[in-house]
Length: 159
Image 1: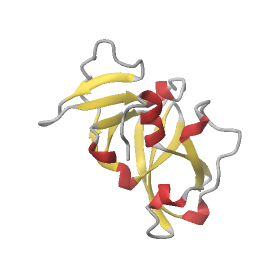
Image 2: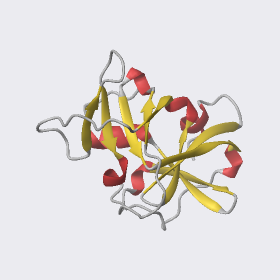
Image 3: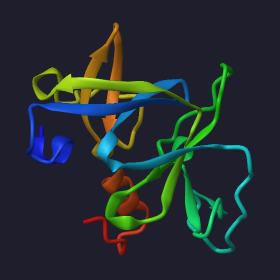
């Protein structure tokens, strides 16, 4: 497990935002998040864009590109309660958001509570899952958004 990726090498604890997409629970480091927006406006499609890019929105005075994370992870749509959200990242000042089915909360975990991912994961995009932690009997798979962004656009600078 790359501890620096999870917590910047500062403490033995990390705060993870839990969210669901495609019926599975995932987590990302809270320090990678700028804001969370309600998915109440459909994004404007961008001609000739990557298939995982849903489009762009302009909630204030800047554009945000939207990644369909469910599509990227090759997950099926499940029939469950959704409160669709956009998680806007603060990675290297990029205006990129991921579209998720719901946001479930923030968990503070010890680095030692996070294990390496095994072979049985929810997605075939295994290179973006960096760890797993347990929360009340549910496995939460940790996603490295930097890898997701670079897989979609290798030229993007994610720092």
